[in-house]
Image (tube, rainbow over all chains, first blue to last red):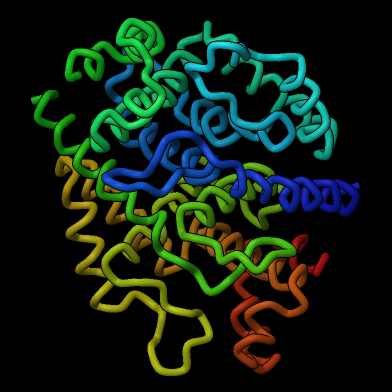
Length: 181
Length: 181
């Protein structure tokens, strides 16, 4: 059984290598080079460790790390949807749910269920852990864009109000970080 | 004080973006594209979450995650040393220690001390947490190389015995994974 589980886990570990090919709209700090989803997820994990004490509410750091590490894995099948896309809504599309079931489904059942639940908790954004994870996800591109002369906001001519509406999620996670901005 | 800490933390978060430019010798699965240190660190974090139950000893998953997420940050200053390098020894060079002190030193003192201690624990490889973290670090390139016709072993003509000596670290972390190989 343990051997069988290991084979499933290795299939998953190989499959998620594809996250390194998913390009985001945002670019690295002071750079023209686009970021990929694996790099982005690593950076959010580092931000979580470093900034956890600024959370409005007590959080489970291990749980939040799992959230930010896996949150974009569905994009291996569903692709990266630009957060300011005016046509396609980013939030938990049917396509993303199908992707989550296929990719997490490569794992042994117990782990597959855990990962799916953690991903859904993140997408819903209701719990304190999810709010903090989402605040990290909104904060990283803000730091990048301000280092890149407006970055994607300028490039795609995103109205200030839309940026503000999306960035409010940071306040939900950490008032300290929101006030810094 | 909290505001001052946040400024230091943000300086660190921007600085470590450079990890995305550090190229490793190894290549992505079934691919010619080299992996960078940020992607590599993300993958080790995912492997840690997925494979933790195979550890020989009980481990603190949060601690191991911190280890694998930060273990290569010193390479921002010190560069990536190929594990089979015949001239330069990889292990905890003076150059890496200087790098650790400079980069972790951007953080507030308490966090800087914590990160330095975690990095040193990883490098020493003595505790159960460090052994498991190191086994992940050895296992990922093994999976990559076997998917790439011998990968870096073939490319740099590394003798079997040297590969075996380095890979033994996997056994220290997990006999289950070692036996699978």
